[in-house]
Length: 89
Image (tube, rainbow, N blue to C red; front, side, top):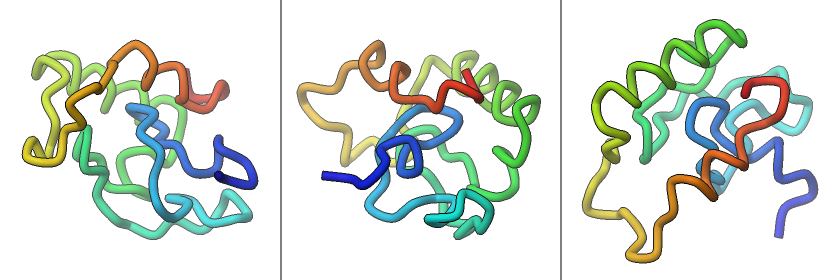
C-alpha cells in the first residue's frame, strides 16, 4: 500500500494519510489538516514535544474525530495509535 507507512502516518494520532504529511523526504510538510485529530502537519507536529502535546490535547477531548462524518465504522483507536511513527510515540 505505502512505500514506507511511517511516512504516511500522522505523528499525533497515527491515521494513515493519502499523501505523506511530511513528504517522501520526511522534511517537507504539506500543512494539511488530519481528519482524525485535527493537527496541522508542519505546525503542531514539527517536534516530538509538540506532537505529544497535541496528542494529549486530543486525548483530553476524548479522542474525537476532527471530521466525525468520515470515522470508519470499524475504527480502532488502539490499532491507529500503534501506527504513530516510533520516534513520536
